[in-house]
Image (spheres, rainbow, N blue to C red):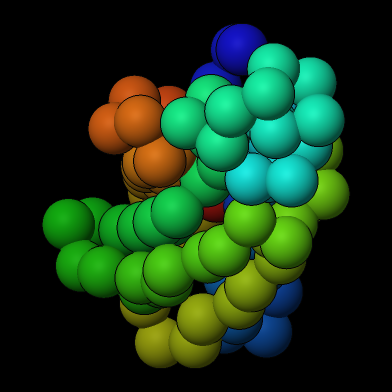
Length: 104
């Protein structure tokens, strides 16, 4: 699992971000079928994004996302070309995945 790949573009005062989290996303049902126990389930439960230290996205997720999920979001009035978008995702087992993108 390699983390988060992201791109960010500024157009018309709006920062558009597209990010992919490399994660297996094993649901409770998948874990039970594969290992006989629901304890092995593991999926992304939280995603946070900041620009210049200001939170622009803070969301909780569930087990019903695809493998290697892609997230798209946009924000207006914050960020300029050259600024960095920092992304942090946390999975059910507490592991964090980080990524960043320079606004172009």
